[in-house]
Image 1: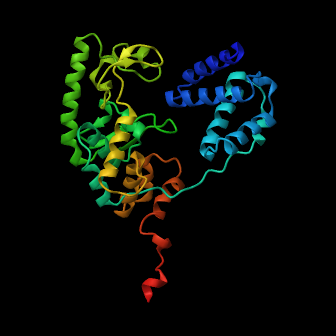
Image 2: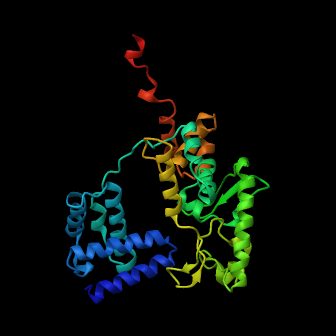
Image 3: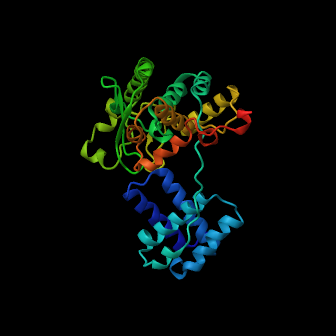
Length: 323
């Protein structure tokens, strides 16, 4: 049984996260880590804890639960949010808490032939989505949240809204995908018409747009490009509406396609984005252009793909090949 004090802190954390427009995924993650942190310390009042208590919890995650460094840092971020924004306590001592070192692995990249093989194993709407991940360099979440108004068929571009870092960017719409996407949107519009006829059709709007534009949530332009098959209750408001398709739909489709294609690489949806960047650079695109298309804040992040391009053994020739 969680004590009332801790429960109130969790509820306050959830409220502040929503006021600050954190994603639902981040909200779930932070709440989970804060609850786990409280449980580890027997639900003591967090105001009574100090640096040693936080360090002990992080060590427990690393040594006993064997979590990755990125997971450990995520837990620390949740604890920082609790102290800085919820309890509003002076926490200079948390600055001295050592953060786990993140490994910098070279991204998994598929060759063009492997990408073609994987895409050929996918059908229907997941096929269109997978093509956008590879053809436009979208993240999975960006593809899921794509709205009708942000697909520009005339200029062959996609406007990606509120991306990682809360910025918008423009990326390319593959010409070879336009006809398929256009037919898909015709089917989606028919589904939206049915929803409106049955008294639904209102989609979730970001921030306070619902108050600013009262009827925008039912407007065709604001609908998701990839809506879910069934209506469901909004986890935040409880309103019955049609959300975008669940991320697991495409994740399962890609994983199954990789197996069917006989590819022995740990490929995932994000691998298609990695492959987009690598193949763009291989084709001679400027790294700054690729950086903008991917939405990377720093060019150093994009530079990692240069280590993949024809760099077996760092570009050197094996002495065995010279015999």
